[in-house]
Length: 115
Image (cartoon, rainbow, N blue to C red):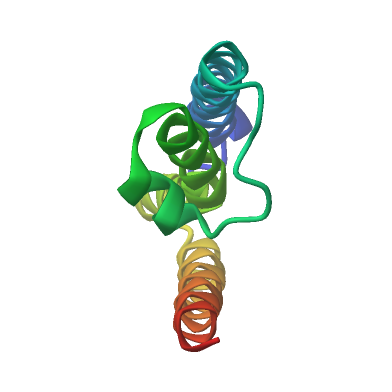
């Protein structure tokens, strides 16, 4: 087994750093545009409604969606890295965690749309 932490840590760190910076920048731009436009935010609104409505709130929603999906990308990268290094247990753990996360997100989406 080729267990080199830099092979896996580097890509994951890049995904986390890049995704976080993009999400924060998009949220900040949306927030600033909202302040300039009317000085009020939409309050507690589901992310998909923010995206659908567009404008500054849509940017905030897009940033929040990026932050929400960031762990999915990290787990996919981890599973890929483990697969390339031949670490079967790491692949299984990553994929199981990914499945649980996607299931949780799907459940939250379904519950959020029925209330």
